[in-house]
Structure formats: structure tokens, C-alpha cells
Image (cartoon, rainbow, N blue to C red; front, side):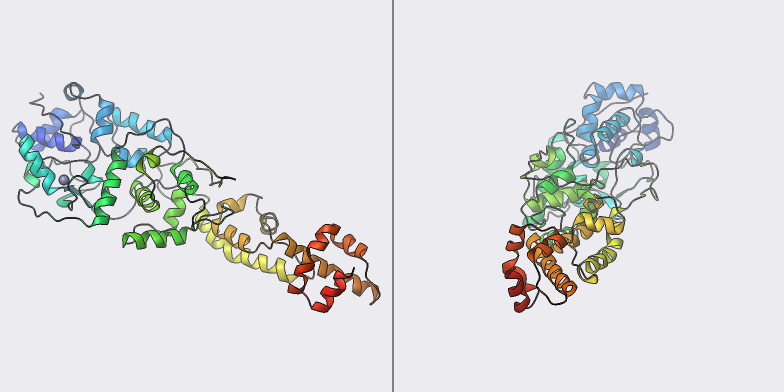
Amino acid sequence: MLGYVPEIYPDELIYSWASRYYSHNGYPGYRQALDDLLVERNGKIHFEFTGHFNSEAMKAISSMYSYRELILQHTMFPYYARFDTLERKQKALACLMAGDCKVDSLMQFPNDKKHHHLKYCPLCSGEDRQKYGEAYFHRSHQIRGIGSCAKHRCNLIETPVRLYGNASPRLHVPEDIIPQDAETIISSELEAKFSSYLTELFNAPINFANSIPIGEYLVSRLEGSKYQPPTKSCVYCKAMADDINHFYGQECVLKHQIQKIITGERIDFSQIARIGFFLGIATNEVTNPIIIHKSNPYIPRPRKPQNHNVRSGMRKENWAAIDTASLPLVKKTIEDIKHGHDRPGRISSRIICKAMGWPSKRLNYLPLCKAEVMSNMDPIEEYWAKEVIWAYKKAKQASGQKRVYWREIRNLTNIRREQFLSTFPLLTNFTSPEIAEEIQGL
Ligand SMILES: [Zn+2]
């Protein structure tokens, strides 16, 4: 039978509330408390999410809160689901509301290999004790990567309670875990500002209507910056990662992670927040992105449906790996086209894709290769100049030193008279002044 049900405090984790339920009712052990709250015997309440509450507990909870609001306001759902696709967000919320806590298959969890502990703010817990007579675990203190309390700008403190998937179902009572006399350390300016940013982003209402992928939005915000060439053909992920890590004074994002974020493969809340804060994008723009392109849009690779039940070996086409692996061959192909033949070749995306045996849009998925191609694309006049010189030499050879006519150049190159004239100032860049003068005399 259900005992006394305490109220849920602002920003409190459901797990914290259940722990207080256990301590307030004088159960001999947490197991008995859980048995009164949950459907399954041996069930548990997820640190960051919820539990499969029985009808009695649900009735008590819904007298305080709609269950949907409870998930949105008292679990870490907004952290893990915020940047996911609309469909997956809706599905995850529906499953959580139905008491399904197999969260690994519902949401993307960063595989950062760091240990995460329940955290608290020494000043918030002091205030909570004054106001409510007890401390509790705030969910906004559990944001991964947050170091400072957004309200007090002091460092958050880790408890010994480690958060991991198969931790014991034990209910750790906040009042027992959070000490009364913890030292308050003021956070650095940057840490405090970034933590406020994280908290704002975390607490903003989730938009269940906006389907713009965050990666695409971030790329649109790079237009005109040093992280994109004027052609917007790629993003300089390495330069961006270097600058971001320098800005924060620690390695918080890697090149390939940025690559995955902009292509939509990765939706890590903390890293997206790092990028947004670094680029100076307001939190309400990150949570409700609108893309305004100045001109031709960048085309990110389409997001593939992912099977989150199978964690490895499913990525058939790992573009980042293909990109890196193909780069040497792309470079060689460019060299061959430019210098390997008698007749000059012009580098273009189409020509390179053809030479590599790729579909014509493949370079859009391979930023390194694309950048290499773009940097080797000559201005068209330079290409014409090289063509004209080649044609002139060929015609002269064929005619055995007799006079070369403009008509012959045109027949060999298909170049028009005005295009031919536009090459004149460039000819000496690619041939001797004598030959340039002979060509200009045609
Ligand atoms: Zn605080």
C-alpha cells in the first residue's frame, strides 16, 4: 500500500522524489518502498528518467502533475532528446510515459566513457533545507558537462553516487548524501557563463513542431565565417575543433565529432551547446532554429535511419572514414589530370567524380575531398589559356612550322573568339613571352 506521498519540488529529479518517499515513510529498506511504487517486483527507478509506476503511484503523481509534464520537467529527457528527430522525440516521450525505461534504444547516449555522478550545489541545497526542510537532487545540476550552478555561479559538487545503466536500484536519500558543510567555490567567469547557457538550453520548452536538424542549422550559421569557404562546399571541422578547444581551454570536441554533428549523425547536447556558445548563438535560436541562407544552401548528407537496438557494425557507409581514405587517391587524380597528359584538364567536381567512378554528388558527403577539389579548381580563364597554348603548339607541330590560324585553335578547343581574347593577359603565366606574342598575333 502506498504511504505518504511528498510533493515534487521545482526542478527535482523523479529519482530524488522517490528517494524522499522512501525516507519519509520509514520503510525498513528501499526495496519495500520500490515495491509499493512500481509495477514489477525488482523494478527500479532510473536516475535520470522514471520508473514503471503502478496505478496507485500514478494516481498520486497525476494529482500533482500531468505525467507528460512530469517527464518534461522532472527527468533528463530534454537533455537526451532535444536535438533528436521529431519522430524519435515523440516516440521516446510516449514510451517513457508508458513506463518503458529501456532508454538506450529510445535516445542517443553520448559514449564519452566518463564517469558521471549525481551532483549538487552547496548553496542550492542550503536554500532547499531552509525552504523545504530538506535537500533534494536538482535535475539541471545533472546536465553532462555542467560545472557551475546557474543560479549561484559556484562549482557543483559530485556525490559518490555514480550514474550508470546497471547500477543497483538503491534509492539514495538526498538528505543523507548531500553534506551540510560543503565548501563553496566560485566558478570561473567562462565556466559560469557556459553553465548558464547549458541550463537555459536545457530548460527551454521542447519544440515538437520544428523539424530543422540542428546540424544543418549550425552549418547555416557558419556562412561567411572562417570555417567555410565562400563556395560553402564544406566546413573546416579541424579548424573549428581547434578554436573551440582553445576557447574552452580543454579538449571538449573533436574534429570528427563536429563532422557528425553537422551531418546529423550525432546529437550530443553538451557538444552542440559548446558550439552554440562558442559561435555566440542565442539559446532560443538553438532551440527553435530557422535557416536563412544567403545563397545556395549547403547540402548535408541525408540522415539515415539508425537502428539503435544494434549498437555496432551497422554503419554501412561511414562517410568520414571514406573521406579520409579517398583523399590520397583524389589528390593523385587531380595531379594526373593537371599534369599527366599532353592536353591540360580542368578540375571540377564532375570530372573528379567521373574519374573516381563515383556518382556525381558524392563529393557533397566527403568534405576533405571536396575541399581538395575546390582548391585545385582553376579560374575558367586560366584553363582557357592553358588550352589555347596547348592547341597552338599542337597546330604548329602538325603544320610543320608554317603559319597557325585562329580557326585551328577554335577547332581544337571549341573556344569562342571573346573567350580566346580573355586569355591574352594570362598567357605568359603558362608559356614563354615569345609564344604568348605569337598567339596574341592570331
Ligand atoms: Zn545553486
